Length: 550
Ligand code: C2O
Image 1 (cartoon, rainbow, N blue to C red):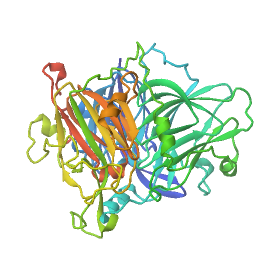
Image 2 (tube, rainbow, N blue to C red):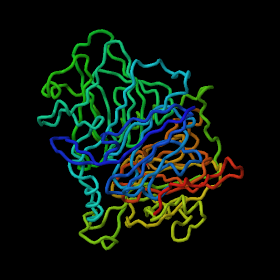
Image 3 (tube, protein in one colour):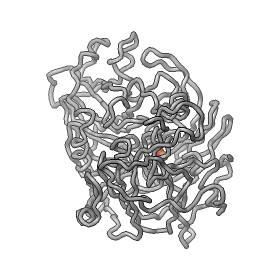
Image 4 (tube, rainbow, N blue to C red):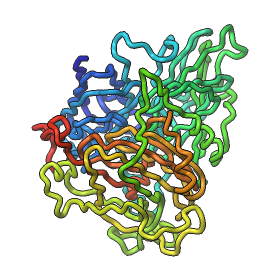
């Protein structure tokens, strides 16, 4: 194991997309940001210098951060933001994970442009559990806004309504040839392939607010990993990937010269609410021979993708994931649980009179909000982890996040009359090593919708999922405790539920939130406060000396 060092200079840089030239926050002037590569077991040190006129933090999405919570990065959870002109070094080890993860800013909506891949190779000499690909290609799916994303979310919070949607989906920052302007050909991500070769796509959904379908025309993909865990390989023509999730897939190029010189790679949104996405299919090119000009790119026939609201296709796809559960890569699924939680996850509202003045453009003249167990998370003004380390909780957090909804109702039926949420910075304290089960139940308040829930500091096992209301008596008996997939982000199905298990062996404060940024902005988050264990190697170490102050 070695130490890998990177420097992130956060600077504004000028880029042109969709014929719009503007200045955006970048890392080292790059969009998307630099690829970070480590081997399992390495220590990673990323020195960040903030040279933009905004606070910033960085999150290493999916990294376990075992006893290195100070490096996790969500602003006001594990650190105060890095202010303009300040620096902070993220310093942690990568333990027991391999595959693709990613890094992104974790302050407001800055991750719209501040993101990049984080590749974890196996230790030297350890092979992949699948045939070694000829080439590996990180492919980050994103969303491009012609407007300033910070202005978009500020405007939404001011008015109480939904935010403006993005203007295009992107492949490694490029929107593709669907957008007709003079730079169109250069705006397209092109993957040059040779017959007979195998390519591993390291896919990341870095979009702010959309779950995505992904397909390559005329090619079947083999999924071999998800969220930096290997899975039992399975074939698929269409993938579904939620914001925050990553997927390693093998693409076998045609054996001999294929019928066409190039094929379209496409993404399109999965959602249940028309009007909340930009309604475009973004296209990139898989080229056996280079295409000349934008017109040829635009003419590529798109692969067949499911309808935007095909929840059945999504459920079938997510049910295919299984851990390897082999001798070398065992699945250590908690067989029994110490504590069971039931979280109702969904949208809600605030009365129009609340906190910020202005017209209310939310449902029925209210303001949009989002909650778990009807508590909408209030971002504190100081770091929760710092407060926890100093055991100074007063005025910062309360340890009374409810283990179940205050008033149970038919979650997937008619919504309750009162859709207003409560507010607070509420956490669930957990004893070290508690085995936890959480059933995440979608609610139909203001419409059933799928929510990609992301847990910091842990990988969890997805032991069950289904439609309708979770039924403890029958559904629990059907859990997969043998080879469930291990992830850090799981979609709570539209009008359905998902059950996850993890062992709270990582002391610190860990946020769990919807990875649709607008839902996070509306409060769809809570935090676990995991106490120290008795042994020295079970305790959270003191904060690094350069940790930013609020
Ligand atoms: Cu990828 Cu808290 O986020």
